[in-house]
Length: 236
Image 1: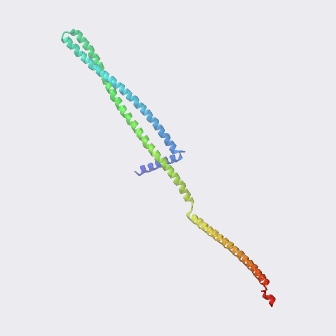
Image 2 (image 1 turned 90 degrees about the vertical axis):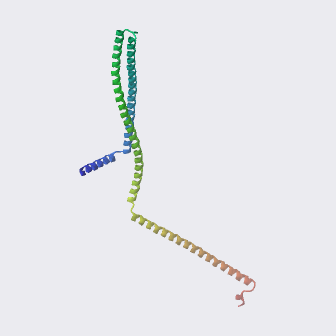
Image 3 (image 1 turned 90 degrees about the horizontal axis):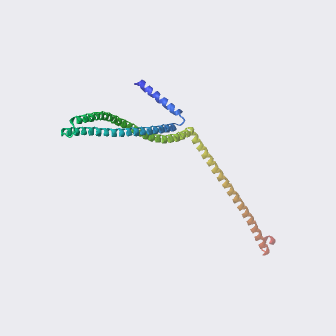
């Protein structure tokens, strides 16, 4: 039993290797299905031809049966006419002998026709079964092929994703994230520093302006007091 299992495994491996070497297995399967459809068409044509032969032979068999019955009925009628002195007995016997000879010939032909009809019926049934089997197999394999096509697409996409995932180390990803976070923190701190410097410059300019404005106001106040004689420095 183990030997057979090993042989089976070897056969499977060789089959898989052969499939892997095919340029496009799906196209090969589709071509195989097209060939099977052609076989189905040929089987359908053969079935139609055999059915036609059976129909013709059945008609011949019916005609032979009718001829056999007709010859038998005519023979009985001749004998009755001879019995009723309507026909010469010797002539009636001769005619009946000929009818019986023809009837026997018809019977032989009828038996042959009956055998032919039975054989053709068997052939029709066999061909019909083969056609139905081919149709069933084609439908089954077409459904399986559609399923395989979907599975191939999924497996191909999965393989690409997994390959990308395999090439991406989780440690390196974490390291990249940490470096990115450090850079963002640094950029944010630098932006904040520039903002503080900008605010400091603005405050310095405002203070200078305030000082200049205060000096100007003091000068005007001194001039105003002097004009009114309120300048204390002159009194001293």
